Image (cartoon, rainbow, N blue to C red; front, side, top):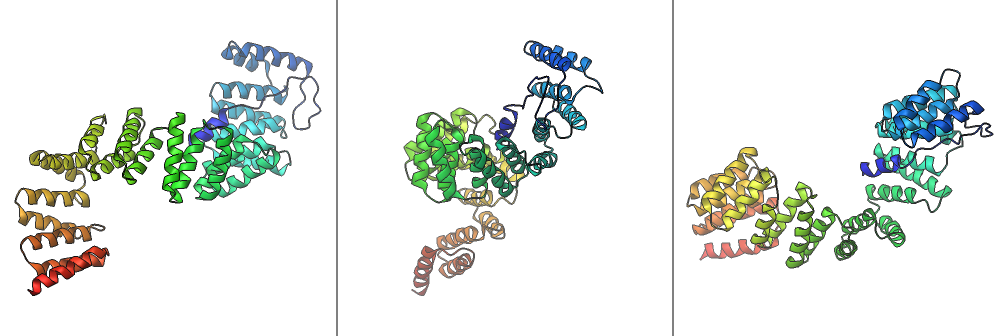
Length: 418
């Protein structure tokens, strides 16, 4: 989201009309000689920005108007020399404190330098002076959003829309505010309006799909993401999300296609990659999961060792699975999922006593108590120790209520009574 605001901030800097007389009380008067200097500077800047900077630095002085410092600030801004640009705008405001355009551009530079508090003060001053336009309110909204103040940002964007009801920048900003505040029904309404105007904007589809997911409208979210894909605007994260929804809907073939497309883009976050591979494994799509894993360039992350271990176990490669699992556990010895897999591997290898010790250890890991106790109960069932299995399952029910377990407990009690 920060990239979005930086783009908007950099789109344009407010320029100064070159003129000899000025009736605007919020812009400095430019003398005829200064007007000629500025015209020459702007002409040179088209082909040689550095020469324009040198020329303007030479001509300006303590007695020159604020217009020269302002123009120099614009040249530095366009050269991405933001510290220097800020200094020139500040100098312009010392000479002419009511210089509106200098304040607007100074606020932009402050935002780019992540001096958001300073930017807010500049734009609030314009608001207090009664000279804030839609652009000013938009920039104030961006500043508040960069500070994480979405409610204040929303107010600024709505003021901008009062001045320019079709303002695209304000509506985009407002959309982000509503998303952050989880006002999903409003996100749907605004995103629909924006998509109707321009269906090629990825951010609109993404906002719409995320709102639908938050509202648990999974079919609608899948349709939105599918539309974005067919329009060619879906990114890797959106395709991965679509793949997950297809997995959820038990449409593995479609899910695999979308996930492969997402991986092929090479822009998918590690969390999304892990989620995709886990989803395929849960459906038993081992070959597809292995193919996706092979496409990950950096395959030595902790979660990759875990998933590779699971894959090797499914393939019956016990030794390889054990080796990978050992590496993963070295990074996190108390990882509940890994300990559960370790106990499973120990049982496959006939090391039941070690498996029992591992599960007893896991039963003390928060969030995995029930899984460990259920696994221990299964081991007791294998030994035909019905009463012991019942006690373990009753303990598991304390941590996690599972209706089917109660039926199983009753069945074991009957077997124990025989």
